[in-house]
Image (cartoon, rainbow, N blue to C red; front, top):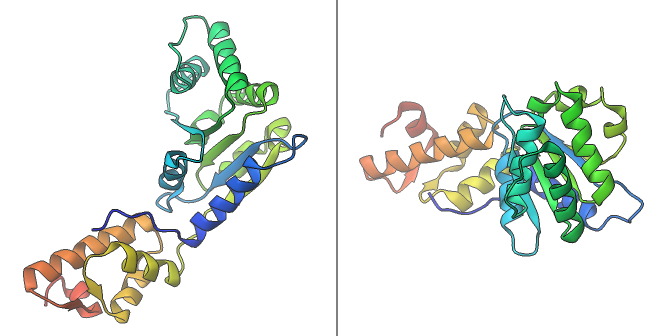
Length: 229
């Protein structure tokens, strides 16, 4: 499998949304919500974006047991400082760092935090004070969960839902990532089985394995169905 990053229609929409967040007027808030079913590439796309040299972003993955203090510790550490002990000091550290060097903060699995109003409102406070953008990544119901926090939800400049892959997406992923040739009917077969990036990649690994073990020049739909030549 080739190690390349494929720009599906979701990725292109993501890039557009982040460009608008980066270049927004000063009077516009910098909060964004990106949500959708698992396996569509939200996390992978966000980490890819943060890794690009022209982007100044940090990535935080929340955990189910995460408290506000724990989240602030990880935020401060990602911002390059040694976290202090007191929660108030952690808050000031995060503020000082983001005022000194504004960065875009990605908060993955935001669903875990929607149960605790204090944590959600703390992120809003940091955004309001520093002006740094915060991008929340969540599951398919994340928008509904966050609607409970009107002061936060009204600050979303961008709300983007990741949708299932199109057949054109699956074809592009196959062409750019797979190291063996797939016939059109094989691409259509994969698209009929799944419309999620993660699962498409699994089918491509299977196609490569079938090619190696059966000495094939190209993979047809029947090969994928049968698992052999």
